Length: 453
Ligand SMILES: *Cc1c(COP(=O)(O)O)cnc(C)c1O
Image (cartoon, rainbow, N blue to C red; front, top):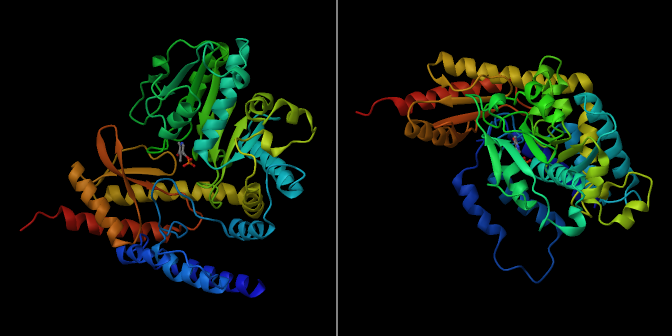
């Protein structure tokens, strides 16, 4: 075992050190070579060292270098050194995060990380949280608590009696709602289409004057950090009205809520502390390994009511039992890496990470605008939308950039425009990486835009 783990560390370190200079997207030959990992499963066992070598030799070249410094697709962070190290140790620990008795360290770290998150983001003291796989599940978990709370006000027990015959819940979302929130609504029986979509402005923010009437069975879903523009719904204008109507306020704050780590960006969160539930991603901007997200609920009793495996279990412990806050029973103890990430950076390091990535997003926008390309969004956070002209031109340039390999950016549709989206979310990205990437993008774009012979 010891030799194997030492060899693993060596190979992993050499993988990571190759990332800054290799193509960010994998070459198609490496993807094709993955077939070598298949074939008929051998009858005889294979030595673990050989398995590791096979996985590294064939698998590593076919990875996308999302752990490297120049991956700007979707919203994808890297992995902080302390978080990766903690992840390895956690793998060795093999802790089941479901219960106190299965993993005291896993359970305690959840409590510690929850309190740190409450302090850092100035969330309501006493909030409960579930440690889930990401924001899709955090939305699901927070919305499940909302469903429970809204229906219990009407005397309906959704856990016991289901939704058939239940009083209706009115779900309100912004027109730029993230698809994962709609998926969560569909899983909860609330329906993807059975929603009121509130018109949005040019940045994707809900227009407060277009809100429908709110009441005490309204589930209002706000967004803190639009996946394309980084913009925040105007919570300061909306939340007091929702509170007055006794509606439930859910916030999809996958990456945007981390703006609260910086005094400079925290004003973007004004008003959001009125939320009843919040979904936060950790594998994005907090830069921990997959999979990791947080569902935070102001009144933990609704979360517990929605997630407890049964009322009897709930009564069995006065300690915080992790599995009463999440959909799963057995799961990995993912607070371990969160603890390591937060503890290693400290308040200052966390603030620096957010401020640096935001500054780098502005640098990207500046360099591309100076080269004559259009920036489609107000760069308020870490997201940049660039248009290179027509939809065809933008699509061709995005593909050429991915093939070029210096960096990786994806495409998106933004209010009728095809655009390239740049998300700066990694601890590993330096200003030099931004300049090098912008230079490559400009070069590729000019080559493609040059009129043919
Ligand atoms: C990424 C994202 C999600 C989905 O998060 P996963 O971690 O992929 O499940 C939801 N909402 C927003 C705003 C996001 O950016």
